[in-house]
Amino acid sequence: MLDVLVVGGGISGLYAAYLLKESGATVEVLEAQERLGGRLYTIFSPEGHPIDLGGQWVGPQHHRLLKWISQHQIPLHKTYTEGYNLLITPARRRKYKGTIPRLPLGALIDLGIGLEKLKRMARQVSATHPWEITRPAWDELTLAAWIRKTFYTQTAKETFRVGLATVLGCEPEEVSLWHTLFYIRSASSLEALIETENGAQELKFSKGASSLIETFANTVPHTLGDPVVAVERLPNKVQVRTQKGRLLSARAIIVAIPPAVQSRIHWEPPLPPLYAQLSQHLPMGSITKVIAIYNRPFWREEGLSGHILRLQGGIRITFDTSPPDGAYGQITAFAVGALARSLLRVAPEERDRYYGQEMEVLFGQKPQYLYQKTWADEPWTGGCYVGYFGPGGWRYFGPALREPLPPIHWAGTERAHEWMGYMEGGMAAAETTVQTLLTSA
Ligand SMILES: Cc1cc2nc3c(=O)[nH]c(=O)nc-3n(C[C@H](O)[C@H](O)[C@H](O)COP(=O)(O)OP(=O)(O)OC[C@H]3O[C@@H](n4cnc5c(N)ncnc54)[C@H](O)[C@@H]3O)c2cc1C
Image 1 (tube, rainbow, N blue to C red):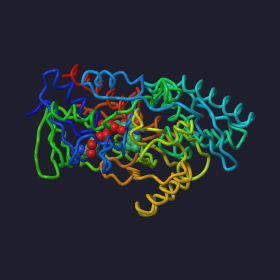
Image 2 (cartoon, rainbow, N blue to C red):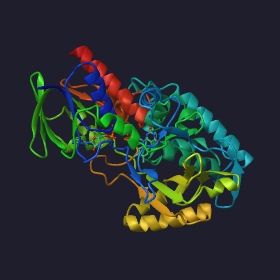
Image 3 (cartoon, rainbow, N blue to C red):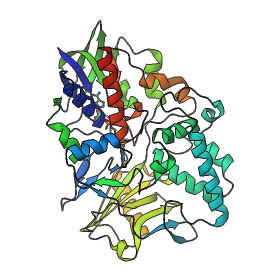
Image 4 (tube, rainbow, N blue to C red):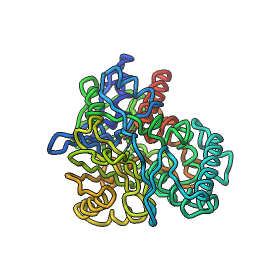
């Protein structure tokens, strides 16, 4: 019998298994898909350029991740930020530098006041016990309702919506204000979340995020392509059944998968009510990530950074993710808002065509290759980037997200109190869970 089985071979499950192995425990990771990495997924263009369809950026605050990257000498480079950013409104294109776009004066003041308010409010939410709702009104509101009552100008409203929808991966109507505040708090600050320099978008894996996952593949025992379909809790041990019929026993199990897909597992005895309902209350976001490849980053020659914020259309935000030497051009874009959502109803090829045209409108040239992914159709993930709570979610289901049910323990970025939604969060959740498991053993 193994000491621990880990369900899910994403960064969180892999890091948990690594930590357990380091402590001398016997462990095996069970992964549903034919590859490790989960929401970290690199494919390659016909020329061999890495295309990260999932997570790609690393921030200077991601200490665990940076330590691992440095120990394994995984190449990173800085996101290009030289030149002017562009704000595109229905009326015009404006150049600007820094994080906050050059809005008309009234809208700029409006936006500034709202952002300060949000930052102050976020400091009042506990990252470790976010289910302790100290301001019930903030948990009753959606982010959209707060935007409506906070901002006066349409431009500030729209700019804020695009920024926050891109950060959270869902629309402001779907998420509670309280969850938004927790998300900011878990990342330490709003600046750390939204900024490129000194923020979560500062660094990128030069060879793609799969170069991170490869460093785990040889050290952590794992099985691919065989989903866990049943988990039985027995006195002092757990028994697991996989789709291919394997039966495995261990003293404990770490479940490191998005809560939204945990109801695909048959739990025996059934999970307690609040744990069982968690997957109904923590849906995954539905953002679409678009990557366009050009033969060179020609916008740099025009003094532009490639970073665009757009208040209409499907694609609303773009970043230059080309290699530093500019050997080819790569734009990472995110599609949010009602139009992007409605496009999820059409065939992927049609979406490709649409986003190809959008890139041409934004950059003046058709991309050589275009890739887009929503993750909503990934059966073992359920969406992207991460799960989120609506009103009342943290209050009623927060404890079930984090508290173990020995011998069942939980990991995955959704369970993290630091950097929820990020690779760092996945590692943080793994660390907390392994510590709990080892001290309780
Ligand atoms: C488009 C996109 C962009 C992102 N950008 C960034 C970024 O720039 N920076 C950043 O830090 N983060 C980013 N993220 C988030 C980051 O990728 C995730 O936070 C992180 O990868 C989550 O890791 P995890 O191990 O918690 O979960 P996952 O990666 O989802 O891993 C869970 C694993 O469990 C497996 N699984 C599920 N059910 C079962 C089952 N029943 N049996 C066996 N296996 C199962 C899944 O196949 C999966 O491999 C992004 C995510 C997406 C999708």
